Image (cartoon, rainbow, N blue to C red):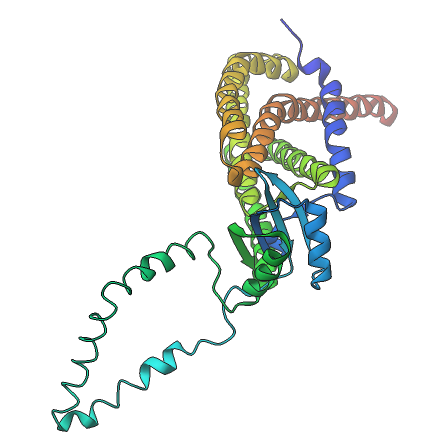
Length: 369
């Protein structure tokens, strides 16, 4: 029988090897939050002259946006990120104009003459423009449809200046988030993760006991640190950003990891009754070997699906898929090689402590007599 528990120090060393660098890069500021958290405007656009990212960034700096960051996203498209830019016009006179003509016809409704006056006005308007008016209206409607930019807005002004420099360009996607929304999202994300961890800890304490619950929470924190640390390294070296779906991925990882850990812990509890009297480390080793195939097979099916999504799925969920893929691999590893090994080490340390206390008491007894 392969002794997994006996090599637990190697597993703990490997966990330190993958978590400590991540923590270092987190401290160094490697995490790059997206516009969902920091606030700002992000849009993807492809200009007719296909300029480089550095050229567009220099042009934006010349237009007063020194904070702008530009990088290529494939297919000739560039992703531009700036401080928040208004996508709506500063004034909205539409409601004031529509309310004023409505009360005026009511007092003048005493004479029947205004009633025919609106009738001839719509009648001649379709007659002269019956052939000319319908033709420009369909032509005008498709032109603003590809570019969701409202004329007269600050974003429209900036876009026109860029079009004048680099040729026609249609934004593929535009996102604007204010800094207040971003800070609220950060707070709510932290609260969600903490509440999720506390509920899981309470459930495991009630179901299995204090030691089991603590070991499972340490394994969960290991998974979170691994995912966040790898994103910090990718952000530090490649500028990878994490968006609002990243928190959803973390919560999913926590649930998946604790599910795998509960399976192992449940088998440990069953085997303690079946193999009463055996050392706890041997029982843990039996339980891991019995559930190892099930854990690996379950995780492999998820990993294959996530890998296909990462390679073939849309770019909008790529960060979410990558976080899930890292978390599932880390969760499978931690439930087998961290949570169970911590539990075995804790019981072994406790039994050694009790043995030392008993030996000390036996030695002190004859001296007291």
